Amino acid sequence: MDCEYIWDLEYDDGMWFGSAWFSIIGNELDDVMVTILTGDAGESIARSQTDAFESMLKALENGLDEKVRERLISYYNDELKYSYGDDDMWVDIDDDDDLAEQVENTGAVIPETKITDEKKRVYLMFSVRFEDDKADCNEIAVEITDGEIIDIGDRNIAF
Image 1 (cartoon, rainbow, N blue to C red):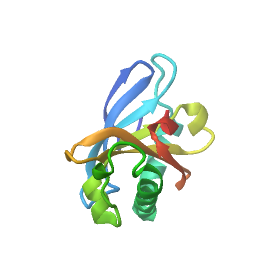
Image 2 (image 1 turned 90 degrees about the horizontal axis):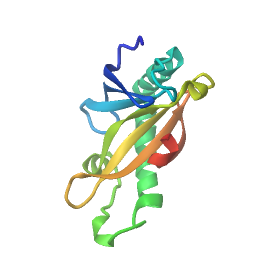
Image 3 (image 1 turned 90 degrees about the vertical axis):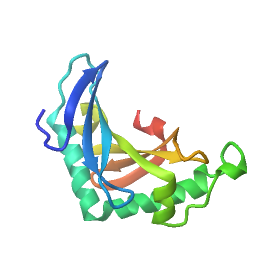
């Protein structure tokens, strides 16, 4: 695998796990987990998968990060907020500063080659914090295809 942006790769049960630095929320780069789905045992990472990741990074540098933040705020307020639990656990997210306090970038998922060969697709993963200021397992996934936001939903859209 030849991708200068992902390192410390380890294989486990049809997936490669590695690390990468990028930022979507806040001003500092985040060290996030990158999961690369291969499906078959021991399958190597395809060039189309690394190309998809590199394409997503370039799109983020060219303004996609702002669009992702806007969609996250909208999704949180319109879909997720008050969807379960007590109303007290949900805070208002009105801008990027509020978003940075409540949502953290946790990684990226690169789908199998049958998908990345077709289009350059990556799922960005985010966790929502609640009253104890720890990230919850309630993850949000944002589908990025060919540098554009296609879908946003719970983590299941990435898997």
